[in-house]
Length: 294
Image (cartoon, rainbow, N blue to C red):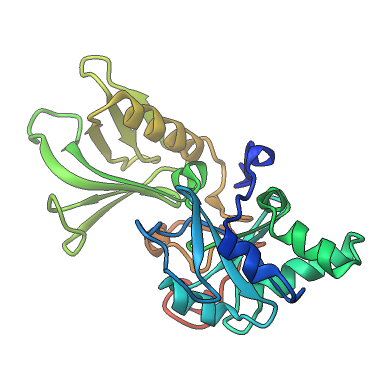
């Protein structure tokens, strides 16, 4: 799995203004949290203990204290939640009662820092984000998104004969199947499901950026999908090729920091093996594990 760890983070330096320096003086329990992925305001708030300065497009330096909770930071930043990533690995949503700055201080103490003022200085350095990083929204990894769900509106034709015409349809590639909607811009109508495990995906040479998807078995069905760009064509070909080459109906979604089961996974009715280890899903709720199809 491709991790979401930062690249080149050692070149990022926090830059304090006089307001930030004044905030840190005289109280070692005050500090800064580097917050990634939030919306950058054109003008930061003029005052207040949790005001922030814009460092770059995806990084905000948020002033707070060791008693400041996630709930308070979310209210101040107008975001729904905060996410924590350690060492570029899995992300998890923080509980509202957790205290980000205290977590940073505890982390520094665990690796040997003891002097309170030194801890305060190190916590304010954005280079520390290489090891412990906070996000104001869950970052999307392109490779992860590709393996979980591909979707788009493309020109589609059913069957190998010329009796069926090409038509614009919503198409999804998820789990172990290709899903074709009966209408162009909606997934509310009838859904045509094409199981791909043991089937075929082939290039259609007489049309540019076109793939033929076929299910396995004597009653095999076929769909042709014409993609708009070479990038889409290659992305779908790569993922579909993995599906058809499997000998069992397996979907591996481990280590994806998922909070709920992907919605369209329920269409994979031939699914026999599903790996959801090392995620952060709850048992209850719309995307909970207890609502998995059986």
